[in-house]
Length: 153
Image 1 (cartoon, rainbow, N blue to C red):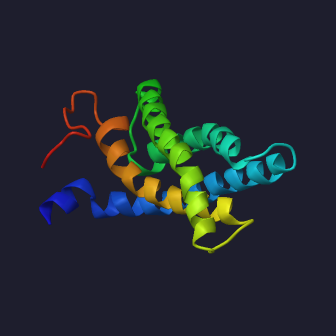
Image 2 (tube, rainbow, N blue to C red):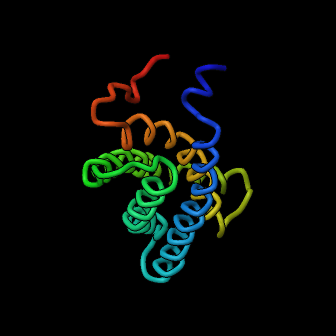
């Protein structure tokens, strides 16, 4: 139980969940919007839509995390760079997993035309939860703090 409280302090994690709703609405809204616009013009539009939306979403989320969750002062460029690095990994994972997830949604007959939206939503939820630990222990960790994503405790 101590590991959970130490890694997920209730107040900070609560703020993360609230801000996460705003980030998710913004992120999913941009993804869905770009998917809707691009679908008329290119095949598999949901893939480039996820990349384009991701560029906007990272910066939006960074400012929310910095101001409302981790409340750090200074170090904006270092923290933003680390956020970009963390989000690049999760964005790559999202993009790689998106097509198989969309296919699975279609295969399970959960949806057909809305499969890209359902698949995107499922992946966003899973990746967002894991992001808290990454931001807490890497993006917004104090410069001298040796804790990182490899911490074993």
